Length: 219
Image (cartoon, rainbow, N blue to C red):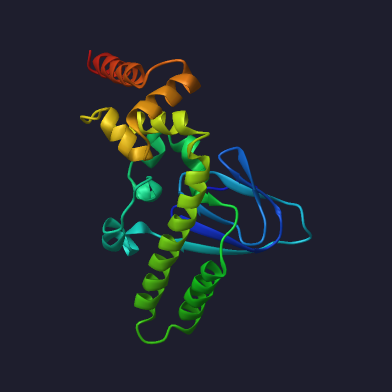
């Protein structure tokens, strides 16, 4: 059964194997996998084992809004809290929110959060917030490893993703090279080899398409 929700969700697989379905795409999971889910995501499970033990952490971004704004974000991990997240073409970057393997520290944070929530001792809300923020930082670091492993094979998709998000700003090759942490000349050669077009040509095409769309809407 597929479902949507009105809150953000972190799903941690304590036991079991199968496929996590997110917006019709299938992602394999096993014990230790974690998924960061946006409210607009349509999700479900296809479980291969006899059962699956899954922790679901549900929250609204307002709970940690101020703290999240202070976190560094070099590869758009925290863009999941953006108001226009689904409008920015993030499908090619969904992998950064699907972590196939975590560490023991990830589960310790989740268990600590669960214990605080169940006991509800003095200042338990502050403790839950503390553990949630630490969990998000932990997941973002694990996600960065996934991103770096995929970056060179998916570099053209990621550059297109950046162009689609920042085309209205004063971006150039230096900005894009800094975003992907590659030499500018090497990035241009790699992108052209993957797509058959230049980065500047892609940037012009996106800007022209946006201008055309605006003219049609206000004509």
